[in-house]
Amino acid sequence: MAGTSQTPRVGRRPVMENVRVTIHAITVLGHDRPGIIADTTGRLAALGLNLEDSSMTRLRGHFAMTLVCAGAASEAEISAGLAPLAADGTLTVTVFELPDEDAAAEPGRPYVLAVHGGDRPGIVSSVTAEIAAVGGNITDLTTRLAGELYVVVAELDLPAAVDVAALGEAIGRVAAELGVEATLRPVEADEL
Image: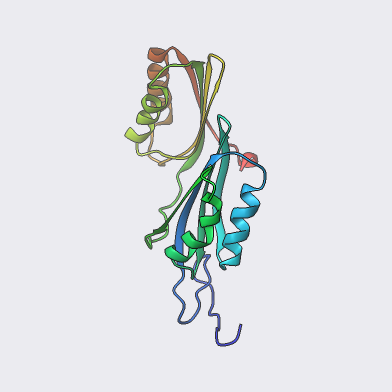
């Protein structure tokens, strides 16, 4: 590109002279149909954005995607570029700039929490409150309702100082009160 020189990478993001690189979070929600991912990511690439993190799923037949992109495009430019996705009213698209932040703290020890049992309100909030109480950070969470069976799978990082056995017992007590079963186990190196 004429007139644009690239300097060495800082962290994972390239830094270009005289170009402000920003990070944006984008959500796309609505009626599922083939091609949403290709259309969305194609429009982002056309704006020169690098897709850094993303998550997509179907929730009860509805499409839900969150993306984190880096590049020089502004929030207004990204919103305008993605506007055709929502033109027919079946999708909702949101774009917002994320603040600059220092690198995240050292990750904790990785664990997986699995909960299953009869569906009822409060399962996720009660179990995750126990993790939050010890400073644990949930990095991924999936829930599914299959008939009467409710399943929660969460990946989490626990601080090194956490008494994992005590946390497991606390989660077990909460789970028993809710009439569900829960297991907390470390992630094995070959699972990463």
